[in-house]
Structure formats: structure tokens, C-alpha cells
Image 1: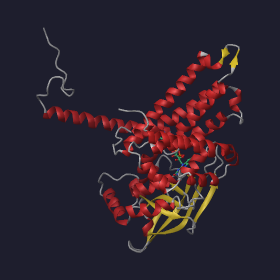
Image 2: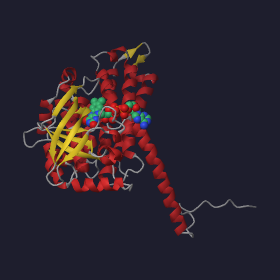
Image 3: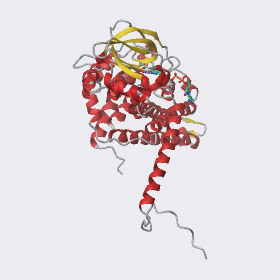
Length: 433
Ligand SMILES: Cc1cc2nc3c(=O)[nH]c(=O)nc-3n(C[C@H](O)[C@H](O)[C@H](O)COP(=O)(O)OP(=O)(O)OC[C@H]3O[C@@H](n4cnc5c(N)ncnc54)[C@H](O)[C@@H]3O)c2cc1C
């Protein structure tokens, strides 16, 4: 196992850090204060080939699967709010990729980014008041008006806390078509900017990631054509039929999307933790108190060592999950959720520890740690809260354990004369005198 980054990965990491240093950081404080959309930075990201379909294709081109998580960590190192403003369209693209036909993916994913100099934005709208973690309880409805061929879907409901809400050119809206079937009665629809009945509701005034716009998205008798149903009518009908007849299978559209994006969210959190750690190291360098230079005091070294170790451990989980995702290795043990959970918790914990280390100054808006601390919190909340990740991991671990146990038992049954030393050989009775 070789844990080193390849030359290409290293070069890409340096390129992303350069963009974060030269383009994002100089304007981070301004957008955080104004809580406005950083259009100029999104445009610059396109010019640097760090936004858009070509960029997405580059992310997918790394056989190790690490380009995406390197990108997320480095841009969030620059500013988490701006990085999310640049990359949130990818969540909409992931929603399309998770549920759409190849033709729909080819048509709508480019519409989430725009082509050439044109900048377009995507939003992925699932959450509702009363249906966040509990995705099966969505109340936004989609009803078919007309027949399967020419009919239109009529969508009604209000989505809350939607990143890029109100500014998105393409909204991927998850709605229920049969409320009795829970998540198996849901489908995803494309709703384009300007569609009658689509409007922006309340814009949230947030603690952190303030350069990323978060709003309600209101849908009142929004009509979309059949072709905007992701996956198509036939696939939806089959899914509903299976659910009604009590057959298993059929994943939630929303949960399938979040499975793809979890290591990226973990990497985003780590960008903040890494930035906070580096800033603290540089801030403490050369400072001293009555006990001598701070960086030579054991109480300081203990905290810095713990923070560095936890960041490194989280990064390994994130990179492993990204590698598994890229190489089609099923995350049966909840490895994607683990990576997001650990990185989110570590980032919140690390920014708090580092603030304690720095002292009063860290409480002021002059100190970068104050912003890192505010930006960190969301990574324990969105795309599955930390508590919900724990539930997912726990269930998957249990299932994984049962499967492995069963597989091992089957192997033993098939090979009664397994060679001595075979790791699957049952433990021998201890010899009796
Ligand atoms: C800035 C921001 C951006 C967002 N962007 C988007 C977006 O682009 N698209 C989108 O669809 N959504 C988005 N969200 C919504 C986000 O994904 C939800 O807030 C999140 O899923 C939690 O849902 P909730 O707020 O309804 O909390 P709830 O589900 O009501 O949970 C409240 C608390 O209860 C805990 N809890 C819930 N169920 C359990 C359980 N079974 N066991 C133990 N604890 C439990 C949770 O962990 C949490 O602590 C965004 C949110 C924010 C704040």
C-alpha cells in the first residue's frame, strides 16, 4: 500500500492551494461580512478550470479518486463559504447523476455549470421543515396532470435551507408522488429558473459559510414536462409497483446522492481544520510568556499534537472513502459516513481547542480562528447530521458483520479439511493431558 500522493495529485493540490491563496483568501472576509454571492470568485474558478463540466471530468479522471477530495480540502482551506458557493452546484449534478438517465445526465449536468464564459448554478432541494434527517416524510408533492406520454408534473411545497436557493438555474427537487410509500414513493424533478410558480423564500442570515447563499425555495403549482422527471416514468412506475407489492430494494434518491458526496463533505471540513491548525502554528511562532517560548511548552505541544493527529486520521478516512467510491468498492461498513462524521467532529473540536490555546484574541473578529470556528459547525449538520451518520454506521457495521460471519461459515462448511494455518480454520480444542 503506497500512501504517497502521485506527482499529478501533488501538482493538482499545489494548484488548488495557489487558487485558494491568491483568489479566495483576499476576499474571504469581505464576502463573509456582506453575506453576498462571490460571483467574481466563481468566474475566476472557471478561468482556472476549477469550475464546470471540464473540471468535473478532471475530478473523475484520477484513478486514485483523490482529485475531488484534494480540491474540496484546498478550496475550503481558503474560505468554506466561498468554496461552497463554487462547488454547491456539484450536489445538484450528483443528484442528477444518481437518478437520471444517461441522456438526462448529458443534458442537465452542463446546465448546472454553464459553458464557456457563461456561469450557471445548480441547487439540490430536499430538506423541508419537519423533513431533514427524516427524508421519508417529505410533504412536497408532485402530481401527474395528463397521461404518461404528454402529461405534466405539478409540484407544490416549500423547501428550506437550500444552498444556492433563489440563484440556481437548475433546481433538482425531490418530491413525493405517493406519500404512503415513504422514500420509495419519491422522485427527483428538474425545475429551471423562471418556471412559473418557482420563487425564493426567506434568505437565511447564518453563523458560518456566509458566502454561500441559503434560502427557502417555494414551489406553487410549478409545472414541468415529463422529460424533467429524473430516471423517466417507466423506471418510476416500476419502483412504485415494487414498493406497493412489498418487494425490497429501491434506494432513496436523496440518500443515494449523499452517499456519493460524503467524502467530499468530510474533505471540506478538513480544509477548515487544516487552515485553523496552520494559522495557529504560525501565530504562536516566536511568541513567549513567563514560562518561555509557547511552541516549546508541553501544554501547547500536547494540544497541537492532538489536533495534527486527529486531522491526519480524518484525512485517511476521507481518502479511503474517496478511493473506494472511485474504484467501485462497496462501502458496506459505512466508510463514507465514517469519513464525514469524523472530519466534521474533528473540525469542530479542533477549532475549539485552538481557540482555547490562543486565548481572548480568538474571540475577536480580527482573529481568523473566529471565522474558522463559525464555519466548522455546519459540517456536523448538513448532508446528514453527526447523529444520523452514527445511526447509518451502526446499522451498516452490524449488517457487514453478519454478512462476513455468514460468508466465513459457508467457506468453513465447504472446506472441512482446510490446511493447518489457514486463517479460516476453526480454532482447535486445546490438547488434553
Ligand atoms: C447552511 C445549510 C445549508 C444546507 N443546504 C442544503 C441543501 O443544499 N439542500 C438540502 O436539501 N438541504 C440543505 N440543508 C439542510 C440540512 O441538510 C438539514 O438541516 C439536515 O439534514 C438536518 O435536518 P433538520 O435541520 O431538519 O434537522 P432534524 O432532522 O430535525 O434534526 C434535529 C436534531 O435531531 C437529531 N436527530 C434527528 N433524527 C435523529 C435520530 N433518529 N437519532 C438521533 N438524533 C436524531 C439531528 O441529528 C439533529 O441534531 C442545509 C442546511 C444548512 C444549515
